[in-house]
Image (cartoon, rainbow, N blue to C red; front, side, top):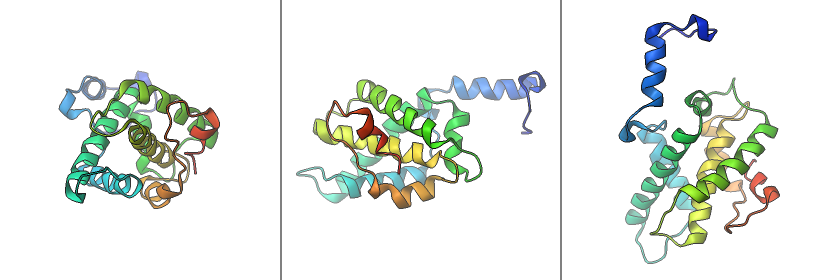
Length: 171
């Protein structure tokens, strides 16, 4: 579908597509591809070890966590922003990334509950995935570059992480 430059140039069909995305049913409220979800789950598996569970079950849990966070981001970010994770040309400035990482991390910790992992690991999982996505949305970054650098992120594991600690997710 052809892009429009201003809202006044939007065709009725383009407007319907926008509404369809916004009012998508739960099972469609995702921006990541299946491959991206699996890759992020593998990255998360490198960062977190769930006690008493074998690797296969752990990876299945991480896929579910990534899906949960993807749905949260779909609900709390405009799709146009979320699409920046696949672009090296577009993107947000580091200052905006730091602002977003603080706001989204705090909001996600209130809205997302993952009862099958300890609370400290929940903070790490949520912040790690959000940090990876926000890094990917920065100028001259994309999801691949963010994944390559993800293990360098210092992820606070406590409920009351300071703004400076949360900004540390921007690498």
